[in-house]
Length: 501
Image (cartoon, rainbow, N blue to C red):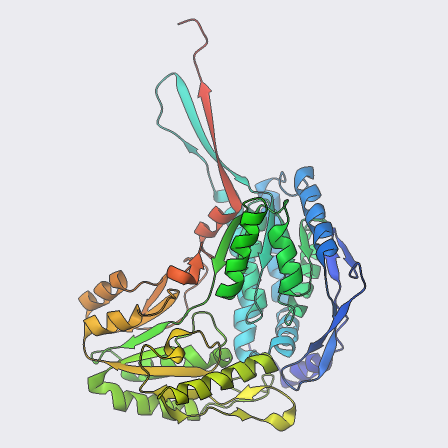
């Protein structure tokens, strides 16, 4: 169902209430009273202010989470009742999906058509999926000798710290919060400081759905303060993080310095999209290559930022990608005619443009784009940008730009394609386009990535896991496997010997 333009216009102009922390079921200012402006990437204007948390705020939230966990208000609630609350939350997200999507777009710049599906649509699906899973997870009985019984059960870990990024805050937060809550844990959520608004609204809906106080807490603020405080806190049992490798390494250090809490990391990628000459649908491969890098201005962890094309079709394929990219409409993300929205922040835009300069200096050929546009709007917009002749040693081939920048390289045969695909430190996602089933299976086996697409890119749903290899991290979001991160395995060994033998 299409969202009416009048609805979008009203939601666009709706005043945004200043954001506070949610701690122990109450909305509170920071202990020191500090706040920060929220700047919209659409026009560079101030949307509102949010609380800027500190170590004391984090400590209050963790203590509240621990109290709620130990009280059993949620952790000991029957699985059927936890299921009802989580599915009720999913229904509330669906009910408020347009409001949540527009608020998120104003905050982070994603084009509305994508945001509606990827943010509230995905989040509602995640809470519903894990809500339905709560009462369908069983323990095990070990195959023991007659005189003993071995029982294997799962228990919630306790307090979970979740740190999520700005590109898809609702979707990625739900990937972490929903299974953590489904397992019976209490959560302290730290949104990205530059994209907190939709998650604060999610917390309001969670309380309306019946999440007990203290079970879900939200502390806004910088990663260097709030994130570190969560990382070193001795009463946080698990950290779940999506973001940069630099921060991921810090969180591992914080865990080592404190209580050896478990840390699960999704650290981005430099994903190869590999097109063989025998691809069954070249036009679909072209359209998917364009969408795979330029949606959300390239600000996607699994973005197909490296396009590897077999040399026999390289020039023809590249020209089609360039033509398609140049037809994309970049602009106001709340305009129905827009294909690509805003870059999230001015700093991110500057970083993207710096990569353009570096790639040019290193000898890559700029085929289209490479510039900031619509600067008079006050917002942060960039042309879809394509480089050809990219060598695997170039920074643009090795580093995650996280912007609308595509690096294109040719290859001769299957072996070279595999070598190029595996030539970075990342291993999050990849794609292979071929009509040869045997080749597809060989590529799946040999490419080091946690998610490999065949004749498609993107679209995997909540039923399958997402996790990385190499320096793309460890642990998995999505699917029933995500519950492993938020549960403890406990064994009970019971002797049946009554002492008479």
